[in-house]
Image (cartoon, rainbow, N blue to C red; front, side):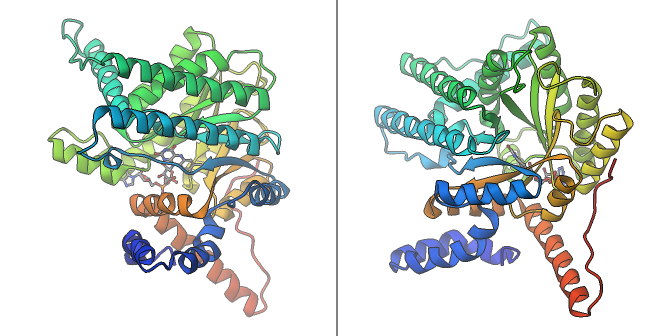
Length: 419
Ligand SMILES: Cc1cc2nc3c(=O)[nH]c(=O)nc-3n(C[C@H](O)[C@H](O)[C@H](O)COP(=O)(O)OP(=O)(O)OC[C@H]3O[C@@H](n4cnc5c(N)ncnc54)[C@H](O)[C@@H]3O)c2cc1C
């Protein structure tokens, strides 16, 4: 049903209509028993732990993802700056406690992760200002030292709010360290990303010190669909080496291509996304190769210079990584190179990887249905390739069913190269 693009496009209006008609009960019942059960881990800690247990029995770990998102369109023009500030700080404190709840839920299974989105932890306007300043500062260094950076000053309350933002993030990291749960910081829209990277760097420096038994605590995300991605990946890795901490990364292609392209066109700036999908594939695969070259098979999590996750549904990238591991003498079960797919997506790939001993994880969105549904819709609308992947999965299941009905031997699609 999620492959019906018209249905996906109309779903926000359909849900609004159900709200107006007081039909949210039956609508949510329907969603829970279809989309939700397929793509999400559950609503309550009990439901999530059942999902985690099921994944574990197939050799797959969990990355719990409490689904909260914000964007600039959540603000209303009539709101005063003080009202907006109070609203966001209240909300950010609440989100920080939900994220700690996610860490606690993840701690039930050893080696789990909690995914965290940083945008709900600070007002989007302040986050965007900080990002703008950091971006211009870096750009001025990279182009010519004489170029003075454009700068939007932050007022006293914004500076205080930024300190609160960092305090919230440090608090979550401290709790995660105590609970032995690793954190994946999601990458988001480009206009927030410099501030997210700044915060990720601060906590990586502090929590990814070499010599810790559980290895790096913090993994930042690299969106390889960006033209600037290779430079950024390499320079962040090199900085981690200069500053003597383990580089923790999750490599993705990127989920906001449509909206990022539209924004660039609207602002009249050159597109920040690679011109072609082939360019993105190239950036992704060469990023993986670069990181594989930084890791030694004799390293352990506590001594490694880098640990990373290939977060992708692309079987070519997964295969290339498996071949790259084998070529360099890594056992599949190395803890320094992991694989990740979204729950309900490319299960054949995840189960093959897990079954062959590779460290494999599922991103497990969870939470009360009314909060998870907008997240699911946004993801489905933004990421049309996800729908394409679902079609592929559907075709696989259909051909498997056909084989079984015809009484032929069942096939298990092994898509990964086994070592
Ligand atoms: C475990 C996990 C965690 C994730 N976390 C994040 C996250 O924190 N932040 C985030 O942004 N995304 C995240 N994603 C989503 C991810 O960025 C991709 O959108 C999604 O996985 C599809 O890419 P793919 O590698 O699976 O493969 P494919 O389906 O082979 O690649 C599709 C991707 O290629 C890129 N692309 C498509 N067409 C073009 C084109 N014409 N030109 C240039 N590039 C193109 C787009 O990025 C598109 O999503 C995550 C995905 C997974 C599996």
